[in-house]
Image (cartoon, rainbow, N blue to C red; front, side, top):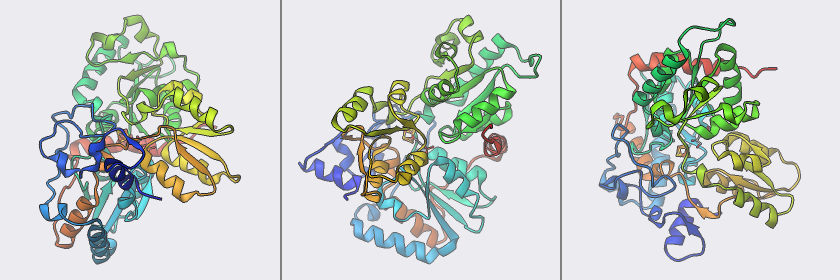
Length: 424
Ligand code: 13P
Ligand code: SF4
């Protein structure tokens, strides 16, 4: 089974198949130099906000190395460092990175993993910026957290910035007041998806709020509704809508907050009636999945099980058989006892890996266009070799740090999430 990087390279030289951006065949450092935005791929249409992390300056000698040499250097550096370093990899990383990860997981599992390695001097996080920030918040003081390529952001996370959320918060406070009701429930509890900046996690910690991931969003919302009359959910409208809908919240009680419009583009009554105010954010990768793709999969493969990530639009989630986090999707496939056809709506590197790991099943991506998360894809073996060899030399490059003033509040919101238990 070829990796996604190999498939994209082959497509660019004329082999069969389609990719959303043939430029993905170029190495990521090509786009670090002067190309605005996030570079090619699913999130290429999104604009890189001024405040987000900037390019990693990969030394030229690493740019020139062949894949086999990079692979060997990564192995050698890891062997030299031993337990002084731990490499965490998200499911969406390329195979060429995943093979070096000590832990592979979804964003919840990796946040947990970051807490289990106090002996390591450095955590090298092969994922995106918000994940590395979370690792730093949860890691032992003094541990370095390294993001191999600083340009690996998340376009969805950048759709909610602290200033816009503060403005929204003030507008809601003016509308709802700040006093609890007769049941002691505050007017609104802020809930941020893990895919958000540390500043927003800190905001939630400071304002009675909590973090959630796609694997525990319902549990977190249930807990939030016990403490609050409403929830302000950011940045992903789809995860918020899909989760609240499953919990029985009617769509008309989930107005969307557009930060560019007065009152978020809503009238007062809609906000007064709201149970969940949804931020106008989305994932460019999961937005690509459509109901037509689900229908085509069902027509072509009778009996197919359609599994999608809850960042997909509501109509896609409704048309699917099951929805869940990346690890939930992996578990469903792993636990299927009979040979099954699965059509999966999530990032292509992960789907491709499932194809290789579970040959007893027929596994397809819902979208036949190869379109990885362009920011996850920025973690190329060249960057991993570089940061590991720098560690061998006693230098920690591309460190991600969160100011302790922010981190202490963010830790409160993360701890509330880690403590949340599913309701009976
Ligand atoms: P998980 O929380 O399922 O790992 O998803 C992270 C992510 O970025 C999905 O787009
Ligand atoms: Fe962000 Fe979407 Fe990429 Fe996940 S898949 S890191 S939400 S852009």
